[in-house]
Amino acid sequence: MLLVAGSAPASAASGESHAYAGANVTFDLQGSAVTDYSVGGETIVQSVGVQSVSKAGGGGGGGGGGGLLGANGRADLSAAANLSLAGLSLGATTETSAAVRADSGATLTAHDDDNGVLVIDSGSDTQVVVANLTGGASAADDGDSQVQVTTDDGTKATFIAVGNASVTVTNDGDVSGRVGPNGSVVLRSYPDGKDDADEHAEDLIASGRAAAEVYAGAAADASGDLRTSVVTYADDVTMSAERAGESTVNVTADRASHTGTIVVTTVSEAAVGSTDDLHVTVSGGTAVEASSYGDLRSAVGSDHSAYLVKQHAHESGTAFVAFNHFSERTASVSGASAANDGGSDDGDAADGGDSGSETTSGGSSPGFGVVTLAGALVALAAVLLARRD
View 1 (cartoon, rainbow, N blue to C red):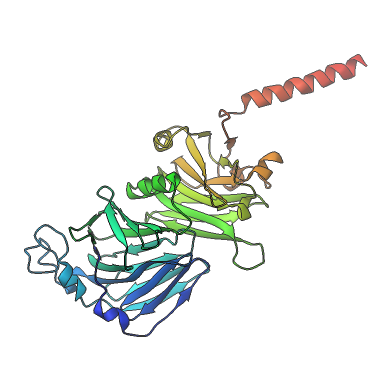
View 2 (cartoon, rainbow, N blue to C red):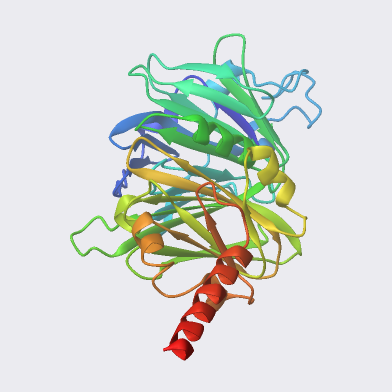
């Protein structure tokens, strides 16, 4: 798959429009392009379209300069501007996502979450993706797998290459890249601003260490129900999220292989109450609080799971949960109010998985031996006093 951000395709303005309007994401579907892709009211991308390299003219795969790809593997932007894109149709939609199917076999899935995550999967055939940035937008390389975008009004967004993929900025300031079969390109947007936790989330996704993201917040209506969005970046991972009491969200991950992974879980105050002091419980063994992102990454494949909590300025927090191994595992993320009540409202996370879960939070050290011993001493003292009386 080749990603190009340059001139708008000629076919983007033709065809029937199918508007999608979620709580955070809106876009139109015009023939062969997704247009006016907006997150939080900010237009991030003017248009996005796809086509298979075989139909786009890939220069025989090796790039001899006779097709869309030049000898250096980058895009010929003049060819991309006139590229005949594949037809698009709106597929399945849910409360938190909308899938757009391309005749070329690619899928563009918009996730109606805080970051408006857009995932473009190539399917079984190498694809070309043409994305037209908004007027006045700028792009800059950030390593081999990320391109940072700033729109004309200062909104930040990032193109991320996941798996067999790469993205880069051309000499003209546009964006190009290539993704092979089963690869994907991800677009994350930050209408509320971008912080250090967002940067680390991008790195974990790009490196393949984070296989999924979960967003949990309040429903768009006045029902007060929990609204969750799940984004997966690995084919063998399945995710679910549900409320477990007023201040706890249970996130359940399952993977076909035994290999552990990191799940990025973002919760709002509407979902867990206060996010000032998030508590995390992991089923199936000990969970320790990591002191750094390096410690978090090291937990995968070790003898314990780990987590790292970061607060955001916009009334939300992110828990990076590193499951050390699989099968099915459950992480419970609780707000401060649940912790003050003695834990999650429905008990520990082991109810949804293996026994032996452990809760740690803040700067406390892992384990519960000291607390258990103190409780036993208090109980013994009470018995002795009763006998003395």
